[in-house]
Amino acid sequence: MIGKRNPSNRELRTRKDLLLVASRHAACAAFFMSAKDALAESVAKLVERGRYLVKIAGCNDCHTPGYARTGGKIPEKDWLVGDRLGWRGPWGTTYPVNLRLYIGNLSEDRWVEVAHTAQFRPPMPWFALRDMTKQDLRALYRFIRYLGPAGESVPAYLPPDQTPREPYILFPEVPQ
Ligand code: HEC
Image 1 (spheres, rainbow, N blue to C red):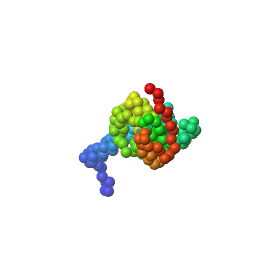
Image 2 (cartoon, helix red, strand yellow):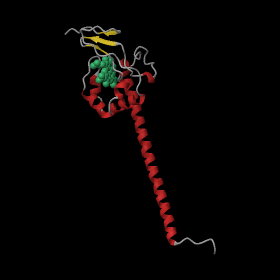
Image 3 (tube, rainbow, N blue to C red):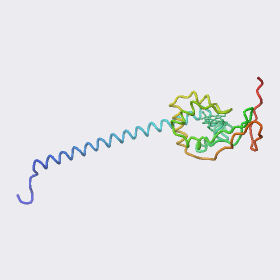
Image 4 (cartoon, rainbow, N blue to C red):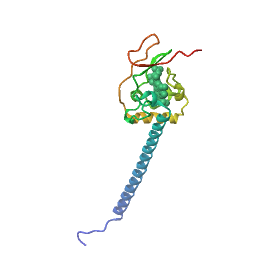
């Protein structure tokens, strides 16, 4: 038998080992792929829940120009960019912040902390954020991050003695 030789036992073992290693790699890859898919799926679920919460918790009513006026007929890509329409009352004049830019500057953990502890001026319903579960706040965060940064900053808060140059909604002084 010239030119053809039987593989030695040692060679055979090595080939078997190689096959074993290769199949382990395949198993690992499959495991990581499914872990990645599972993660992508849970992120997608959070985003979906965030979208739902933004709609039903009324964030768009004030933070999206024209949303309330049009009965919600503003495309999602234009949501939460803040509004230059001021809210004037005994607290001064406030502007619904551009949440797309605001949340882009915060980590997820910091957002949860701020939402659970901060008190903002009227008419921001800060108590709604305070009472949300961490999971819901994370969903809101993921959705707003998913929308990505857009729009511009809104005018800065004005104290009660200053008259805004831009249009505003006037709240009456509530009798005590
Ligand atoms: C009735 C109108 C209104 C609604 C509804 C509303 N906001 Fe606001 N929001 C405001 C105004 C006005 C401000 C600015 C308050 C201030 O200057 O202290 C504000 C401020 C904020 C801030 C503070 C940003 C900063 O400067 O630190 C966050 C965060 C926020 N809103 C998130 C939300 C979310 C999330 C929702 C939905 C759950 C929501 N808002 C619903 C009017 C509203």
